[in-house]
Image 1 (tube, one colour):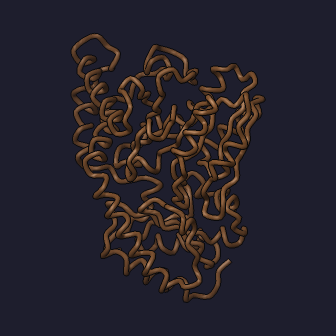
Image 2 (image 1 turned 120 degrees about the vertical axis):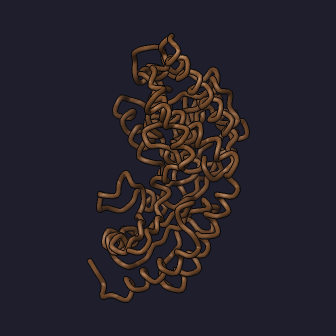
Image 3 (image 1 turned 45 degrees about the horizontal axis):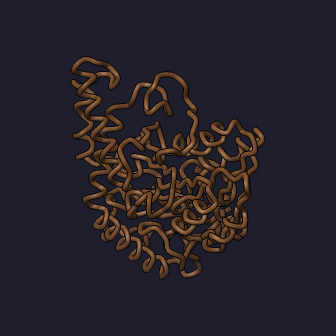
Length: 381
């Protein structure tokens, strides 16, 4: 292959060299435990404090409201289970949607097995939830509503602020999974009316293995990991200092470059959409015309099983996906597309192309040519 074309930014983003440079000292010379009292510990503590401030600034929060975790999935679990455990699983009702990431969906299923009442709200054919459906699902015992800011598969942006306003009027807590949006859309926890918000470093050109959960002051939450007093008592364990520094550096770069990154992702996405409309005239674009993330292009290709198409593209140096990387090896229809009313056979032909800094307009013709070549082949099963 002459050049790799990376169209899977929703799964992970490449580590920005500037982020890696900020992390490097804490992978080598500055190896102290952040909780230690000596000079190496103080150095690590100061670096973590600076990163906490950078992450807080990205979402309009106070530094003390940022809890560092090991991933976005852990943050989602801490949000849902932490609320339920705080209330000792007694008369707890939660509301979420049919298109959430598995880190929320399966956390809710786990709580349901423990006796928590869960209401799953439907979405429309574009994958968008109606705030009125959320309102109708609320009960006197509703403790938490969890709605993702934008869907990781089809990219549909949810009316999060409207949902948050009605949830707060009901005196319940509101959680947003913002893993997909933090690098591309402005986030303000007060404007969104949220009490809990999930972030992940590796979706922001930061390192894997580190996430954060925003916890508004006063939000009732119990820890999932018991031990030392780390992270305000909500997440015990020695901090991943290098990873946290990387998340802070990535957050600072997002604040400086977000608009330019979003414009680049949108320009490449739109060029891809135009080129593929010509190459694959029978394909249907998922989520459209609802507002979607600037880098998402999700197609119902009609070309048979997407696993075969993705393997074909991979052989040509084009990295693509059908949906969430967490379910890439599961050969069954996406729960997101099923919730949107897409027939199983069509859903199994889905292709997700997500643009970002690692792909350019010059890459578009090669992608269109590869897909046209595949479409011209005999049908595959």
